[in-house]
Amino acid sequence: MLPVASYYDDVVQVALTAVSAVLMVISVNAYRRRRDGRYLLLMFAFVLLCVGSASTTILELFVGAGPATVQLMELYLNPSVELLMGVSFLVALLWSSKTRRRAGLAFAATIIAVAVVASAAYVSSTGASALAPLPAGCVRPADGFLIVGSSLGYNDSIVHGAPVKPWPILDVANGSDVAITVCNTYAQPLGFQVAHYLDDKIEAIGPGQALTVSFLADETGTFVIYCSVLSPIHVYLQGGEVNVVSGQAG
Image (tube, rainbow, N blue to C red; front, side):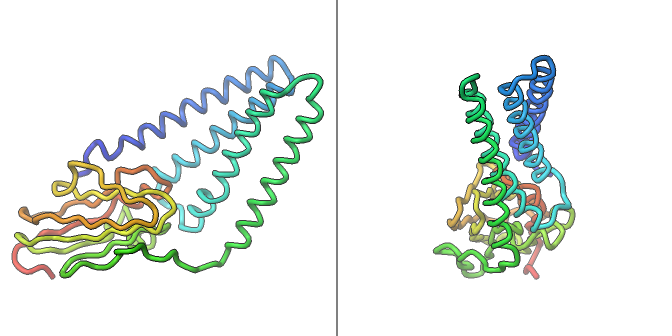
């Protein structure tokens, strides 16, 4: 069973999504009462805020999105939404009767430019299968385990059906010293914890970094490997297991 703290960031993200939805409704009502360009831009910005927040929540809390969908949303759609949201707020602040034409044209040009750049970036990367290089120190320790984090989760956990199906699975003998090297080839920090053994603090691994953790397996049972660091693939990092068995591990 995962500690309650491991879900803290998820609760915050859900709360942010709820707040953004409320702000979106308020901005829509404001524009309906006063149909002005500035209110239209503010409404557009809050709609984008809600869309971006909701998409992040969906990626973090719901299982089923494949790796291609995760990559599309986190590398292209979400950054484009955030950029357009920022531009909307900026143009709304600069909006006036004298500058509304120029501001409107600039905003339209920004939307077109973002769409073109994001589409070109996505098309150019489609089908690319090159893997990110392993960080320095990303080697399996003697008689230990190596776990690599990528856009596919830990050791391709998405492909293995995590978190519905446990992955990765580490089998160790009771009374043995366990060493695990965790590498991060992903674009964002990832967390690594093991219930009972490594749940007293968050072990965060930054992009391009490797971390080695160790503990004495002094209690038999199945202990969950989980993540407490919020990221678009957060949900796929909750299904690993360390199986501590009596005698020699298989």
